[in-house]
Amino acid sequence: MSLTTTRRAETAAPILDVLAERWSTRAFAGSPAVDAAAIDAMLEAARWSPSANNSQPWRFVVAPRGSSAFDTIVEHLVGFNRDWAQHAPLLIAGLIEPVGSDGRDRPLALHDLGQAMAHLSVQAHADGLLVHQMAGLDAAGLHTALGLDAGLQLVTVSAIGALGDADALPEALRERETAPRTRLERAELVVLDGR
Image 1 (cartoon, one colour):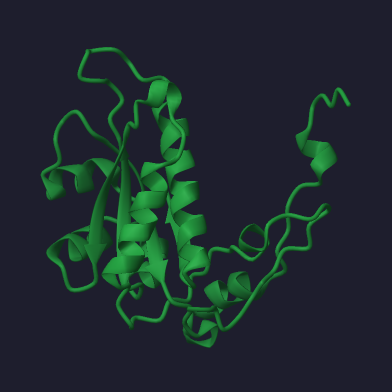
Image 2: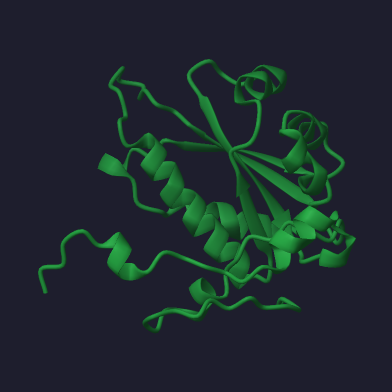
């Protein structure tokens, strides 16, 4: 599967195509559904991401459009995110298990979930899908509504699917969708370069 539109980053050094071409859309095509093989590949990529002490503290709620979990997640997104994310064919909630079964805290659980989500999103992009991660949600309300275990902490929700029509977005979102991609300069990010 390939994307019909690219927003390739103008990088300061050569990087892998799948990384340079990855971007977070708000314009999702409601169909087709994300097929099971693509979902399996995303979750497998996340499964094999690195974690502190190989603790693998990430957990996921997979919610395809039409499922009660999808509707529940949409209900708990902040209005701005709900406006566009409800059109995605798949939502995946990312959670952490901040305390292991041995009772020890996992201080790097958020970092490890970030690694897993990065792997998931790169795999999705390689399969022709786009991923947009969100933190604008009522995490406590969603946790309760989904009936999640008390030992899990809901952190993020990602909308996943094929690229839709940006012209169908409300004007403010359309402007953000088509604005030039920017990043801080590398010199602003590196506080010490011992080369």
